[in-house]
Image (tube, rainbow, N blue to C red; front, side, top):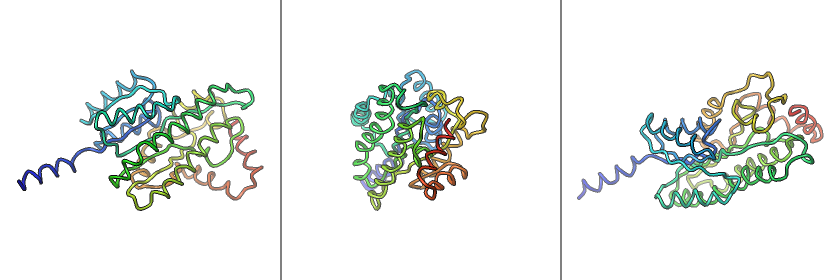
Length: 271
């Protein structure tokens, strides 16, 4: 009997952790999926492209011997957060790590923008992220273990003329993450806000930023470099992780500058 108890206990503690990764089909999300799988975590991959997700899931299972679940969902319909939660409950998937990476931006004057696109951005960057956190956080607290990564941006530290809604959504992600991380002290659960700067990914094309000063003719970090940095910060429970020394200095320098100057500088960078 004692040996059976020991065996059952050893099987429980040897079970792999499971990570949900949204926006997993490209960019930072794809690289994070590879890292989590390489560390022998099971993964639940979420993105809009079913074909890309299936190909990635197959690749990770073959390469690392983990289980990869795939859900092709558009989280700009934030009600799909409930679909993810229900899927995990039905499959008895115990989620240890939640990576809220999905998001997009848009370049141009707000007055000239397409409202539906702005609304989709708010729903994806803010509402779906917040809803997923609200759904999965109680489970993590109850088992006294869990980690959440919310992908913000260096855009979170100042207003962003010509990308007004995007910068504002990322400010929400940063402040929300810092606040609940403080609330969770002593629970065994941590929240990390990853704040990358300009990164080689599909973001700039989707946001019409290919000709922006942020990206044009500049050597910028790869998605893999940002993902490796983010994963380390996440595992260490770092509340705010700003990738790159230059980004760190710029993000923190706005504290000491007049707000009017900060806005003008941000406009000069994005134009």
